[in-house]
Image 1 (tube, rainbow, N blue to C red):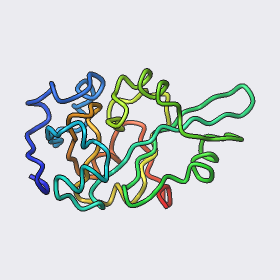
Image 2 (cartoon, rainbow, N blue to C red):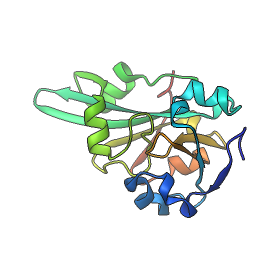
Image 3 (cartoon, helix red, strand yellow):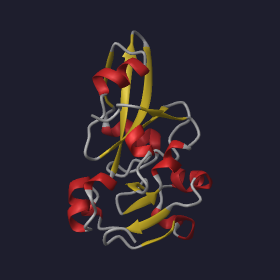
Length: 173
């Protein structure tokens, strides 16, 4: 239990996970899941309603970078107390002239996850997966489950150990 979130092992509640997240769960055997009110899925509302410190919440944002005809995508995971450095660090890491948040329709369609529930677990393998060093060093973080009606509770270090994850200092500012 974290704050007022009542958690159970995620493997016992696949109904609370988006399909790509459930399929990738083997990478996070310690993951717990908590059912929440979907109206409270946004970070500030979640933390207030469930008595969670804002520093335990991690947000996953999808970024699209372009250079000429080349388009690349990245998922960036930062603590809720920070914002992803999209126009600096992420743009350079994508080798892009321009970087911006991906459209909601694109992020939802390609990830197979709900808007407001996108998580770094189970994302397309051709996307960069950038984890802020502050997330990786946080003992327990609350992240999306792929659905708006639940959240995952995992060690920050477990997110850093996901396949293709890259821990980046200063991703969150």
